[in-house]
Length: 69
Image (tube, rainbow, N blue to C red; front, side):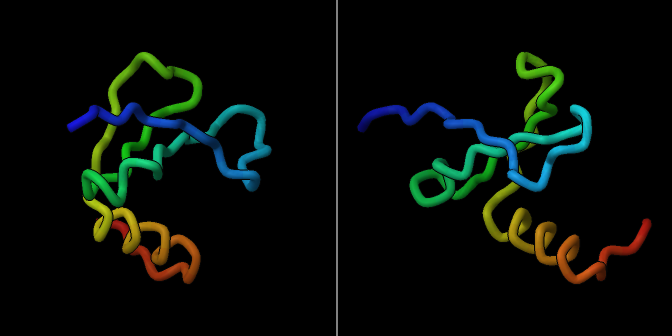
């Protein structure tokens, strides 16, 4: 079994002066996670939500259904 490295990318919609996140969607199928990191701090902490949680988060952003806790 080979270890897959994250292939980070920033959304084309993230043209807002550097306040962006990067995701490594290439790990979704093999590992069931979508790592997320701050583009300004690539050596900093990484969140690793599972694919279901990440999909729910993106859907909530798109349809504006997220609420504050």
